[in-house]
Every structure is written in structure tokens, then in C-alpha cells.
Length: 260
Image (cartoon, rainbow, N blue to C red; front, side, top):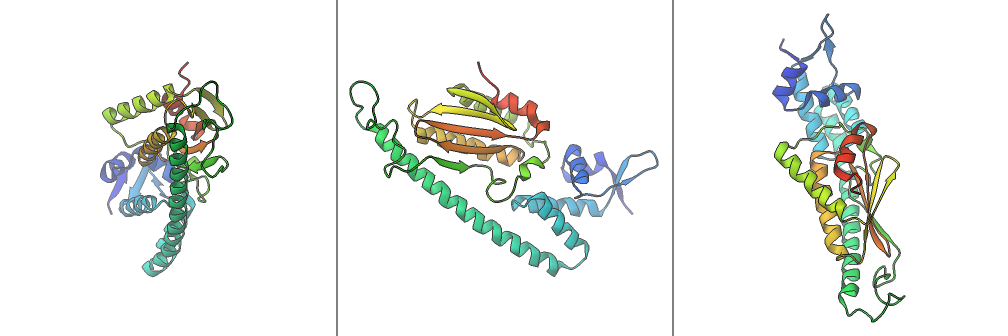
């Protein structure tokens, strides 16, 4: 029977060794030990990793993937499909809700942009100048969770492996983009598990800042699922909260650390 050391399995599967260790600790990828204490994996580990990767692409949480793997171990594909159908149906409902939420947020931003694009009154800001108008309908503050692990899916970002998929050049470019964005923030503060960046609503069009933040956050999720993003538009500012597990504190500081 073919067996793999952890370095061999990492090379064969394309999954970093750090992630393989994390999967073992999370109960997703069992490993045997040699008398010397080295991890060894069977041929089934390759297929198991392919299944895990596929489930992650569907946005499934680790506990859901673990449950699916348990069902899969029984050797009845129909049982796996039944369980997956329920999970995917739930993801469709949640995704549709997020789409509606983002559309509402986009409409809200468009209203703010329209008000700010009009003629400015003479003198100082006042109640009717547009700078403190939340939306054409006078709605309250709007919050959008940009991380798919947040919206009704628990906090699986805490359990995600702290490992990225970007190469050196791509990583350097991403870091520079986040640092440039952070440099435009008016306020910076530490919050539980992360940091908060505050952008004054009148400094530049709120819609442009929000769109840029959303695009960067979406790209970051494709690489580093352990980051969690929430964008909050208040009457006076655009607020970005970024959270990450404790083990990723260094990366959080590198990307979003204070610029002062």
C-alpha cells in the first residue's frame, strides 16, 4: 500500500504541510505515526484532501466538512449527496440574502454619492448639507459583512488554517494595496481580534472607497480565509473592521497596522 510522509503528501496534493497539520488537529485528516514519530498518510488521504478542497469551495464550515467526511466513510455515495444537497441549499439561501444585502448597500451608497455630488452650501456643514445624510430615505447606518464565513455561518474564520496561497510578487502587491488604503484612513484603533479603519465620508466618494475595500476583501478571502471583514457605513464615516485568529496577528499588523 502506498504511503506518504507529510512533505510527500504536500507535494502530491498541493496543500501546504502547515495546512495538513491543521486538518489533522481539526479531525479532518487522520495520520498514522512511524516508530520515530513521523506522520504517514495512506493513498486515501489524497482523495480525502480533494474532497475537503471541493467542500471549501462551496463555503462549507469545518464542522460541516467533518460531518460529510464521517458520512463518506460509510461508503454510501447517496448518503453523502443527500447531506450535501441540504448544505448547498442552505448556502444558496444565504448567498441570495447577501446579494440582496449588497444591492441595498450599493443603492444606499449611490444615494449618498448623489447628495454629495450636488452644490455645497456656503459656510460650515449643517443638518441639510448632505454630509450627515445617511440615505435619500433617511435610513440608519448600513453594515455589510464582506467575509462569507460571517453571514449565518458561525465564525469558521477562527478555525481556518493561517496559510496563504499567493506567491511573493502577488503577496507584495496585495500588501502594498492594503497599506495604501490604510494610509488614507482617518482613524485607526484596535478591536477584539482585530483592527478598525475609519474613512471620513466626505474625503472622497464613499461609493469608490467601499467598492475598493470590497474588491480587496473579496480577493483576500480567495487567498486567506482566516481574515474576516465587516464594512459599516455610518452618517459620518466609512468603517472597516478586520479580524483574524490570534496566530495571524503578525499578518494582521503587516497589512493593516497603524501608519502613524
